[in-house]
Length: 87
Image (cartoon, rainbow, N blue to C red; front, side):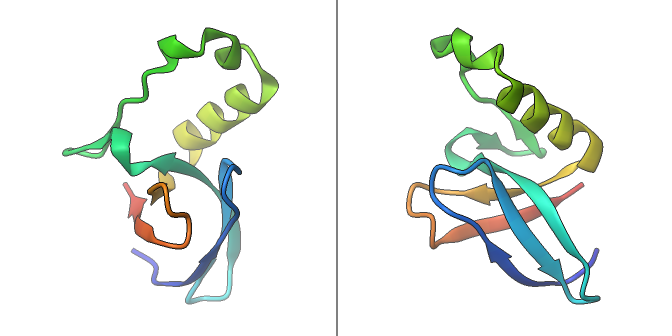
C-alpha cells in the first residue's frame, strides 16, 4: 500500500484530492464513517433520498468507488479524516 502525504477536500464535496508519497495526486471518492462497517463494506441508506440516486453526481461517485476500490473515510468534522481505505 502506498503512503499518503496529504488528503485535501471540503465539507459537502464527495471527493478529496490525495497525494501519495510517490508524488502522484489522485481524486478519490469520500464516504462517511457512520456507514462504514467491519470488512470494508459501505452501507449508506440511500432509500431515504431516492431522487439523489438518479443524479449524474451519484452515478459518477458509485462508479469511482467500484473502479478505484479505494476511498477516504470521513466523519462529520471534515478536518478529522478517520482513515483512508485501500482494498
